Image (tube, rainbow, N blue to C red; front, top):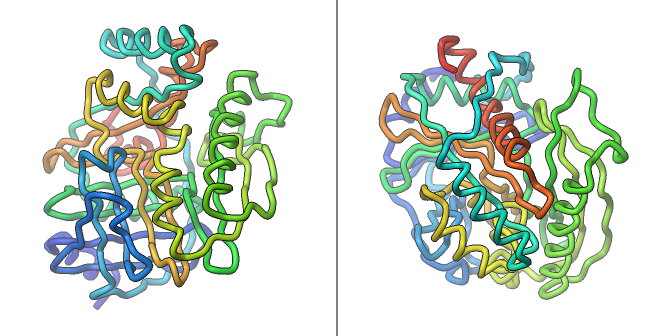
Amino acid sequence: MQKEEILKSLIHENHFVIYHMPGTKVIRIISSSSLLKVTDLNELTVCSKGFIFAPFYIDEFPTYILTNSKSWELPYVETVQSTSGNESFSFPDPSYQSTFKKFHDKVTAGDFSKLVLARTKDITTDVNPIELFWNTCQRYPNAMVYLFQSKEAGTWLGATPELLLEGDAVQMHTVALAGTMKCVNGTIPKLSDWSEKNKKEQQIVTDYIRECIRSYGELKDEWGPYSCKAADLAHLKTDLYFRLAPEKMPDLLSLLHPTPAVCGLPKQKALQFIKETEPHKRSYYAGFLGWYEPYGKTQLYVNLRCLTWEQPSQIQLFAGGGILHFSSIENEWKETEIKMQTLLQAIQNINPHIQ
């Protein structure tokens, strides 16, 4: 069976995922007639194994594991496409203005050191999910690109740059990724180019992740912060390397997720505030996904730069930004607009009339 026939046939499967990991030469496909569902990350065991798809609110949406009941690989040949598109930025709408003020007021009052405000954008297009996945792969070879479909969670697609956890019994690796700047002519900004707001935001995330690691593992090395490129954007990144007993992986995941990069601090208080204040459901946006195998090789990513099909011709995009006391509504809104361009440009490559 040819590649195109294999991919098109998946649309009729109950549950499947197609994904490409950064730096690899294969696209992996897993399909199954059933899903393992858990409602608490502590239900995961060292025997759990498969592709995991977890929500932002673990207590509100189920976590699904697609077991390796039927899988195969296709060769991935990199043909990088231009990431330029029809960029058009709107102005903050009244709903975002109102919500931003509530978030910003809480931060400036000292109730939170950071809060992450997410928003959505709905567009109408009949783009085929398989075609969009393939186009996204070609545009962003250094992202974790996936297409996940199940009757329960719906159809989701993303191109995420943010690693949550990877490694094995010898060494684990995670990153603190925060702060956003637009690359000018493809040039990655120097460390001195970053604003104090971005540096502070990244430091908050790094400090939190470091303490999580020390709760269950042994921190071995730390490198950063430094500028890294993700599509047309740059972020501040710190790498953390550590040792972790496989049986402690569910505990660490429960503590790590969601990190301050997508939530805020204090964590539990921020979670509750976001749930009560944001005007939409995050669902699986800012959750995590990837291959989970405690006694093997685990690779999990935060579900960013993603979208979901609300209806066959209705797509909802997600993006968010960190709110600190010196955040401005204009900059935060523009940051979410730029982040949404990641997938909007892939859609525009198929349907140029989409804005």
